[in-house]
Length: 342
Image 1 (cartoon, rainbow, N blue to C red):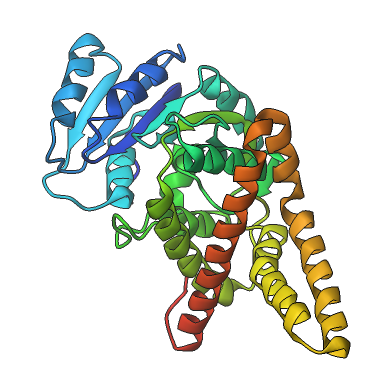
Image 2 (cartoon, rainbow, N blue to C red):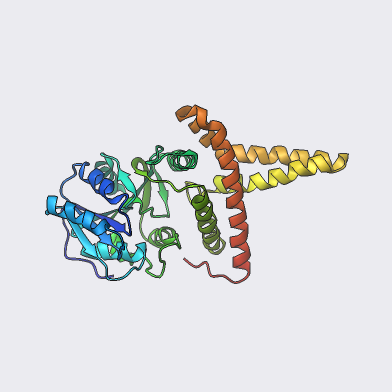
């Protein structure tokens, strides 16, 4: 990618890929403007939306002509291409990416500026309070927050563009996003992060957060299965877990322990006595692995939303089983010759 003109000193260019985001884009822009950070520009990259979200953005352009810009792409190409287009148009020394369905915390950009001297890119994550309601939304928000915040600030190899900033020169030096990864493939951040981390430093700062609209039960099931099966292809090539978050070694083992533990319990109930004792011991071991990986999440839920704990436990057991099935499917695809190069 060709870098833009030399950036203004200290400016942050906030880049938002947007596709049919009429339900979210006004709140997204309002919260970014409310951060009060200056100097800042906001570039909304509309990816050929078919709804009236570009018209909503135009009202912000009229009200904030020195800050908000709308870049309209002629055809739909996916978030990777939209982010690259925004980066090429940006004037800032720093590029800060947000998704259109997020609400950036008021202090997020200030915290990013304080942290970026230590790294080339700094990622935040979702707040523990979702912007929508419902048991699955609360589960996903609580789970994501605890998984990303339980280690403090740490080095990582994924660039979470839902809420993350990067030095413009680092973004362009790494080549930007792979534009062959289109809407629905959902692993452009992993691919870019793994490539970026080969030559640059990425930090996760759990203090930088944004509220997020969480998917429902069916969509989250599909999303987990798709993303984990694709992530497994990358893992089989790299043989490396991520440094933190839901794709860390502890979380992966805990998810696999759920179906293994269930099978052990069934074996203990059905097998004759000598084998039943072994199966019962295996079930206890699986329970220990599960609690080692997800016990912190359960305790976090107990502290923040105690009445929700039984629901959180049931959903965690279910989605852990989905993750385990997706990991198995991804491994089978890899063994069958699918390409997991990143």
